[in-house]
Length: 344
Image (cartoon, rainbow, N blue to C red; front, top):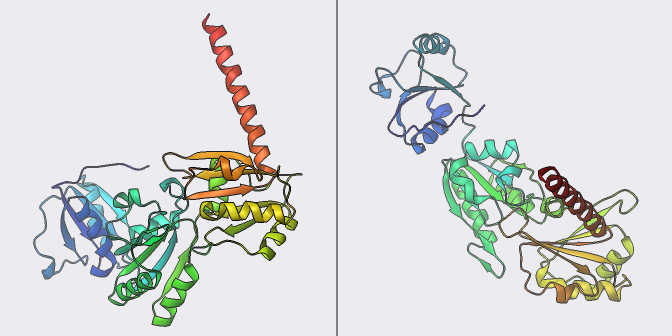
């Protein structure tokens, strides 16, 4: 159960050692609370005056013995107690896969990492619109757009490393999964080279989730038993077109609008039949999500006006989605008919 409480101007006592409680202090201060500190069960002079009766006690699990008696008194006198996790070690980097852009597809590990961050470096493909509700960290936009990088990749890596060396818990929030065309390997290498502890939290890749948002399964029994994920940032070679055309299964292309013309022409030249179904799914899970369906021979003209972020899907699974959509629409028509008959 989650409860939302307005803490603006409320006295909140945060208990726990300074290191363990630092993230909880940030979170309650960001929520507008007047925060008081108690770093040991016996109290400490540097904590300053304590409220006579706090609105809430935030008990950080710092591993120290002796808190039970104080928290028991809080319960006995009717003061609410909220259990808070201890902050992690300082000075490390966590690469977090943010999924296709919706907070609903963030993993529990991703939410926990954001909660404990001091600094978050994010870009436009991550679910950045809800970050203020997920973390009290400093938010740094290093967003990349097609043809324009606000901050270069090399500079992003320098910023992450420098911030971690300053003692911060750094989160690099990326769209999709850090290891699926996310340059996560490069960022890990930069941290390792600088001696900065680093870990990676996998995310829901758009290669699977965005087609699913359009009702397209990347595999389907008796239709496709494999799928290949391709980067659409640069045109493929003739050899790569030939390989893809002969491989079978489903082809998924990420950020492929800019190279769509070369891709379609290259696959046809390599022997893929022109009537192979194809879909362009734009802005998956975001406002304005749109799916354009055509075939390999007509997709270039059908997709005029489409733009990234987009996922291209090539294969018979697109027909599966169309058939499922037709069944769903037919079922909806029957429901509407039944409702009208019952109402008449």
